[in-house]
Image (cartoon, helix red, strand yellow):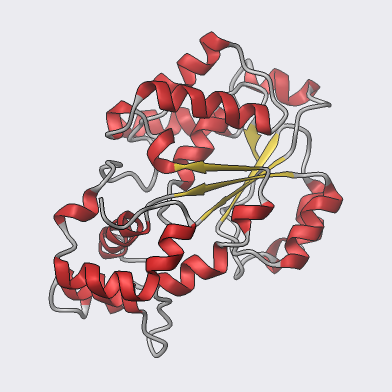
Length: 271
């Protein structure tokens, strides 16, 4: 059942089914959008929220990152090829030259952020599960999940693992540069431990900030359809999972390394 749901969702997100295919062929005025997300901050949740809006569809490109940009011609050329209504998905840290390229191309940027403590926990489980992930071996060489979490908090240059402080720093420029900044906790809705009214309000404001119109009934349908196991990276999707996995010692380490940055992203530490 989940495989079928994933197949149907992929067909919809790439505009391979009617009526999205018809809108894709006739679309001339919709915004072109770049999704920016820290890894494990809700990339596919934000993508799904956008692509449930019928005029939008994902460009036939993988999730962009620093390593694969040149494989597709470089960032300016990727942006230049983007058609009205297309959405690019990325894990691109902030760089002034990339921000300028986006501005010149007339592409709108939306950033999704998430409590960094939940990012760490999600990343730990994801890298354990994915045997093809570049960090999988390093993760599995750690004795316990607690050791794995500490590694993701502190980082390790020998293993080419960036600590959470460095990760947050690299993406922080988007907090000011993106047209829309949205939060995982507000977008996830009640099925993920959030609030329906907050979710609906956020969806309305997000589309408005991107210059897209959405009727109230469409906003409600989008909110209802967001929480889905069709995502290829879905695990639980719940808010506040860090409370079950980060003990006081790990939290102290986290606060020393990334406390100020976490507050910069809008997350108080003592909650």
